[in-house]
Length: 247
Figure (tube, rainbow, N blue to C red):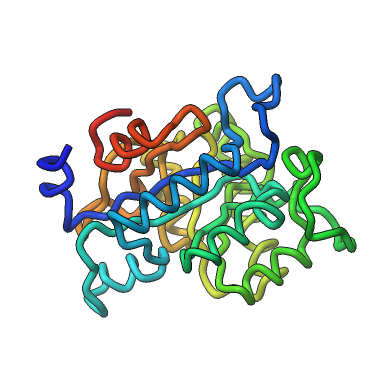
């Protein structure tokens, strides 16, 4: 593991989470373990703090543009889907560790503005963020990108539908957050060269697959790699994934 980590010390590993839950036991319907239990997520962050330098995704893009230099053993944390437990469970732990993160929103699932408690509730694992919460999280330093409008498998729908999924989600998120420029995460990590080209033409900065691997200054910007992390990943498994030793 040390050799693999040494060989990849100048590359960036991008981690993909889906949510953090305060449940003591995994929900029986979460058969893939997408919602990482809080104590396990905390150990993930502690491991990253000891062995890696967690940077913002914008820092990676700046380094690609030659505007800065990446630290060795860089990692970027991302979340998919926009579940409300990011606000009530994940974000406070990330802030306590001084770690930024990038959340990819399914724009049609972000709810209308509503006042809710900032205390975690079990429904947060299924519910989605509101636009007010998204804007508040932005003021706290978190970044947001697009996960399309409705999370369809893009290669399996028509080019017209692909255009709508990419364009409408981008304009909606930019409108509600006043963000200038967005990154994209393909639903299920699925894309073709044509879809990647449409994302570039629409003005996205870049796009992520779920192909495991590291990113450097030559990785195609619209085929960036991410490493999926779930509740099954105890520290030995997590360490192996981050080091690129297992899928």
